[in-house]
Image (tube, rainbow, N blue to C red; front, side, top):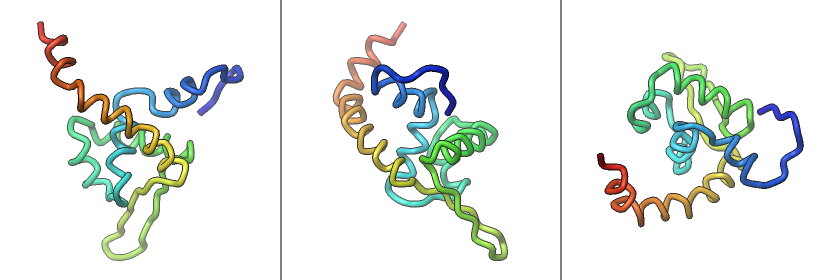
Amino acid sequence: MKKDQPYRCGLVPALAVIGGKWKALILWELNSQPRRFGELRRLVQGISEKMLIQQLREMEADGFVHREVFYEVPPRVEYSVTPLGASLNAALEPLCAWGEQHMQEIEACQQP
């Protein structure tokens, strides 16, 4: 994550990290246990393989996700949250609870 100016509000770096549709969902699915790529692809419904690869690489570079390669036959790769990623997941918990509490209201407002 690159920035041009210092942050003035803690919300800015938090949203920069989870910006977009997929990163928070991926991080959330990794919260409970390490996951393999195919498992993540099934859990994060609607994400393309290309987008999942891109998002995982970015989150690994930003220090939120750890990628571990197991050199066995066949090779296996697992993704897990780092302590930094776990702390972000903890911050997302109240937002998730709020979304669950207001889900029906939000869906009703978004109906054409």
